[in-house]
Image 1: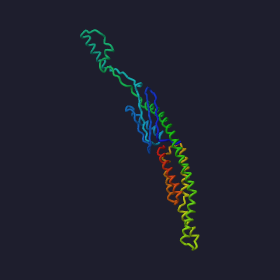
Image 2: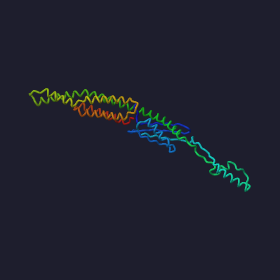
Image 3: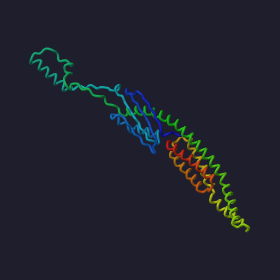
Image 4: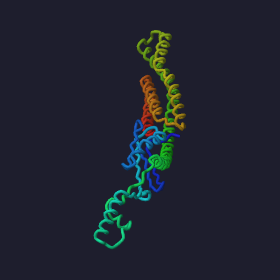
Length: 292
C-alpha cells in the first residue's frame, strides 16, 4: 500500500547496559534528506544509522534523534603505576630507616600518593554499540512505518475516490462530444438558410464543414489516454513499492489531457466537465505531494 511521507516512530531499549532511545520523524520532501542527531561520543554510528534509514525510506525530510544513557554501562579500569609505586615505597623505607619511624608501609599508604592508581574507562566495542543503536532504530522505524502506512491508506482512499469522479466525468465528455458536432451542424444549416434564404443549400458542403469540425473537436484520443492513466493510477495505489514520483508525473499527464479536451471542445457542458476534472486533478496533486 501507499505510504505517507509524514510519520513518527519511537523506540527505547536497554542494551549492553545502555539505555538507548531513538526517535524518527519526517515531513514531505522531493528526495531523501536524512539528518542524524546523536551524542558526540557515538558519532561513529551515524553512517550505519543512515544506511538503515535509506533501506526503509525512499524520500522525505527525515530526522533521527538518538539519546543514550551510559551510566549503567560504565566500566572502570584501575591501573597501577608500578614504577612510581616502587619509587614511593623506596623513599618511604629510606625515611623510616633513617629517622627510625614506626608504622608499616601498606598498599593503602601507597595508594594515597598521586598517580599511583589511575582510573580509566574501559575501551568500547564501537561495532557492537553501533549494532545496538541500529537494533533500537529498527524498532523505531517499524513504528514509524506503521504510522505512515495508516496515513497512506487514507491518502489512497481519497485519491481513489477522486479518480472515480474523473472517470465518471470522462464518460460524460464521451457522451456529450458527438452532440457537440450535431449541434454545430444544426447551427450551420440554420445560418446558411438564413443567409441564402430561398437558394438551395449545398448538402455536401454542410457535410464537409461538419466533418472538418468533428475532426477538430474530436477528443477520442484524449479520453482513451485518460482512461489508460486512470487505470495506471489505480494500479499504483495498490503497489507496495514507493510510487509518489510516478504518481506525480502521471497526474501531470492527466492534467494535460484535460487541458487538451478543454481547448478542443467548444461546448459549455464539456467545458464545465473539464473544470470539474481539473479541480479533482489539483486535489489529487496535493495529496500525491505527501506520498512516498
